[in-house]
Length: 287
Image (cartoon, rainbow, N blue to C red; front, side, top):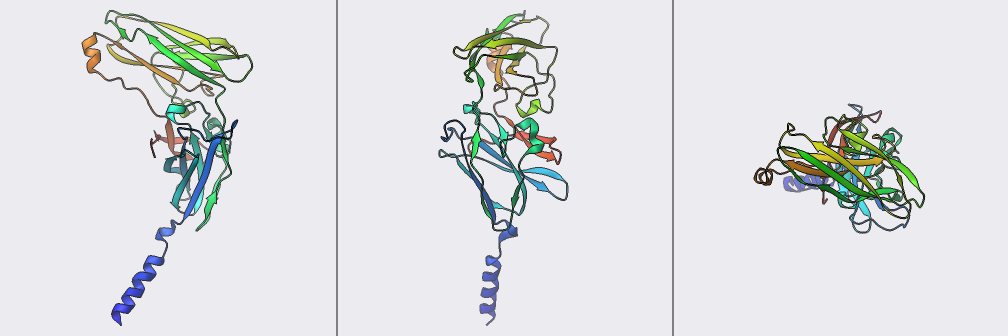
């Protein structure tokens, strides 16, 4: 009899949902223009609102599969929001918060209410192709002697809008600080080392932009990062940041040192209820 009661108790315990984590959110991400899945698939970051702290905290991030589908399982009841990022190797799409909200307007995102035992299928997420992007980004030379010299950065800007346009472009030769909105894109705040150029972009032929910078002898040896962006402003860049680096010094010392360049977009791990980012992290890859 005791064994029977024990068996019943164990069976009843196993039937109880584990900590109420029985809900899920799933969806599909496609190209807004073509309706086709995007490959490599975009990354989708999930955040949950914590009633006790009043903050949004990061839960998990997944990558959409070849069909554009993604899912978050074993979720608790509560309020959630989604942030969709293009993959670093296919960064020709605009990032957004669900549903169709640009990052600099993150406080206007769509709040997702998830109930107990609910399998919520979201409406189709359509990422907008970037209207502009860089191609053939180059730096010459990549090795500058300790005595100093001049580096030249060139890139072609592709305009996919079908109309002539004018954009500002920045090349930042020394990253000194970050701003809140710029951090959505991994771009640096404007500094005395930034060069700004306004350029008219052809709708049919890629437009070449060029930056030159003199590297003085008293600048430190080692690897140095350069970022170039383009858009209306630093707060609303319209072209994915292009990162390059050069090394100052001799060939042997530069071969021993690895450049520390950002390779992945940052994601907010904790946000206030007003949408301000309180903690940043890196976007997981390959999940």
